[in-house]
Image 1 (tube, rainbow, N blue to C red):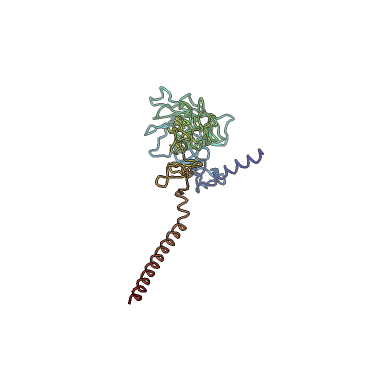
Image 2: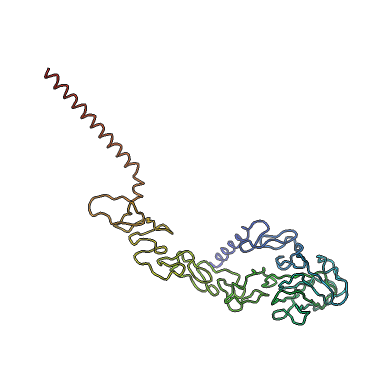
Length: 379
């Protein structure tokens, strides 16, 4: 049973990914392929190709601010040539360690991560880096909770720093490297090295809107999402609330509610006041109490009665009501019955009309013949 269930889930996941247009992937197909040689259906670069210029990170989904106009300038802390760091190429490197360099933004911007590409040869056992972000000549740092570095591979260092405000300048220091090749900077919300970037309003998925803006992880709980602390899985239909642990009220029509608040999205079932749906119907029932008490089933979203309770028929001139069947033999027909029997009723009416006409003609001929016969006898 578990194997069948896993296969079923896998088939759904595969369908979601394969259903995306060319060069798009991921949930709701909202990620675009930024690989030099294209992507597979999961977003991985084909033939282990690199990202196109201007993009980096997991599945090439982080935009490089160093290549966005107006481009920031890079200056050395120690007087050295930094041409290789600003040429947009990751294969041209300095033949010495710059150790420290400064990036100056013409337009202040938020940042979350700085990636430094370094030479892979003659590297030390330990390499890393740090960053200082400032708007006052580095008197105070704007990094929330400081900075931390992660060695992605033997040629790449990521330095995380979530700025508390748009920054004008930052200073990067590296250690354990023999030369720098390129620097990339992003302001995108980062969850982790191996996850897609989160939405700009990611904290809206968190209880009390509190999350770590550098990682996108919620502090307390998810709201309308599950998979805490990442909170990247929307609540399933019929669930809502903190980490999706609550079920939508039976008062909600179709059992569907807002995944964050639990308010009914499609109206009420047996209640009259959407989206709260806490006032019961009086003398009516169904979707938002629109169905008359004598009606068994109404058309969804309207008062039109599709079938009546036993002993009732739809009123011909008012399809929103049912009336009691007459106790004696006067036949009342519902609108649907009249529609079905209309050809037969029309045929009967035509036949009766022709019969009346024939009878009138016969009587006329009979009376005329009688008068003629009487006139002949009198002569």
